[in-house]
Image 1: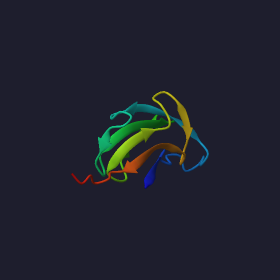
Image 2: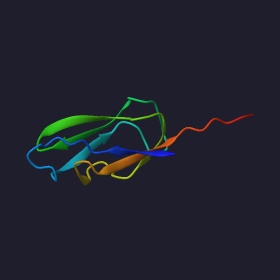
Image 3: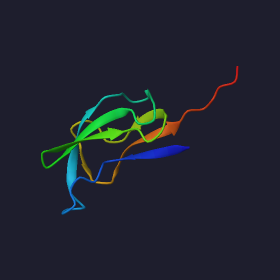
Image 4: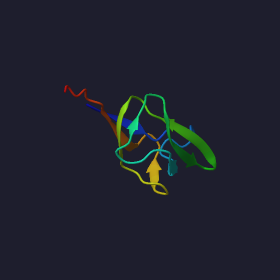
Length: 85
């Protein structure tokens, strides 16, 4: 199962406003924990943090410096699977 990581809605007056992914604090394929800080985004000089909605492996869709619309998917988190040895 995968969960979408969305660009947060920061502008109430412009719901289709675009912003930039400023920094990814974790890399492609890294394991993240639920509520871990994973990215920083910016819309009209307003910065916001993006937290992981669940634990799992990060798949980045929008790279640092790229533009994204508010509420668009910037990454996915693939659910961690238990390995039986």
